[in-house]
Length: 214
Image (tube, rainbow, N blue to C red):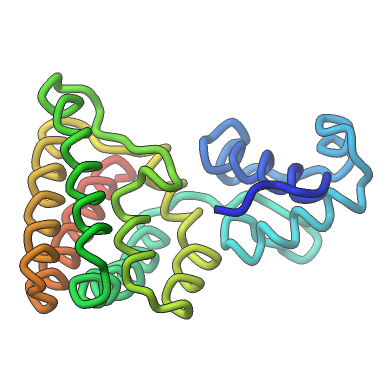
């Protein structure tokens, strides 16, 4: 991901991370005055950051209410994950064709580095960015429109559900196994199988998170 350059970029990234990681609660109202004090920037910078967060789908504006962080709900999860399943399934299909042998080897190495975490029974959680398994596969699709729809569109809202509601055993171990099978399908250049496994993997993740919202 691009490095923050301006004060506006830094504010946007800091505010986005606070929302995604739950330091600013889902469903809470955003006050330009309070945020400008907190981040020591002008209200105009905060307004710009809020506009950008709205396009990431993690903030919404309502008449007579103003800007709020989106609430995490079962219906919101279902709709988001229907789109995610379709787009990331397509990304896995394209990755099986378009990733270089070196990129696939790096993906396998990344997965191997997660093995000890899973073996130790620790939460199988990867930080967003270059180390994230899904991030590598989306980039590996080499389709700029698809990458933009996921990263600039729904990716931060997906992270918000994942980070705040997460995965617990036994989902941790099964998610790792599913990742392993997806990598194998990509390694075998089996685009159809890679897509099917990714779609199924995301459906299972959705079911796991949904239980925590009910």
